[in-house]
Length: 333
Image (cartoon, rainbow, N blue to C red):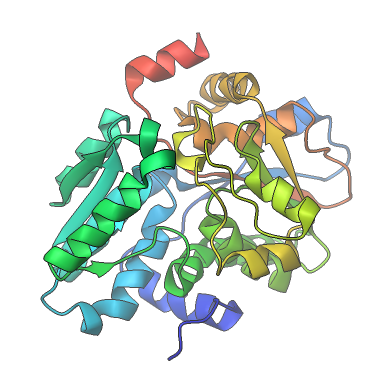
């Protein structure tokens, strides 16, 4: 099949792949967030918490679907990919499940928990200096070098049809759960970096709840997607900055952009201080120890960056929980 952008049929086919490995990720009602936002009547807020996956983030969905759809092409060759950490463990888990060798290029500043998770599934890690990557392009050069010298097949962490479709299975789960309970949806709030998470999810959300507003959330120091929407073109930020290490892509992927442009109504930037407050709130109210990238959607609601208006329910994505304990304690102090 030609490699084009994913569509809802790709997402539906990916569900068959994902179910061979994972049960649906919980959609948890947050009574505390409903009270915090002052919702009236029968409206509800739901957390889609990907911390429950074996790798502690959503990245496993796209990784499993990518390996499944490239298994024949990979054969006995290794898989090479770059990742800030969560796709690293996701593609490593998928490689283990399908019996493939995995080589990961990660920033030298990645949290130790992400290094440990990735190694636990048998992957080999090579690091690069993220501070100078915007000048040297070291990350992409190292990944390409591995592909060339070791005959590896490269996997994109977000800019790929099969990754988008696999991630979208989480969106199908949201739609199915809400429809089974005869709920309506007014707002879907989700992180955007490279765009693979949001692109997959908004395909499913737009199909199941076409009237829902789909809102992207980024760190204030990495608003390339918000700028892209404003300028109607992909905007690159050479030096994105934030404590949200999983949301520091330079721009959204070329295959994600048409999907995001079509379905996402708006995007907001959240300062790191408000993300830290959301991490503390989630820990206090729900006992969830989230990484900054995972909490930023909740931060957008708590801070008022995303208004809770409308008549239906609100779903917000908690994308991951992989954070080192000392750093977590410092951020919520």
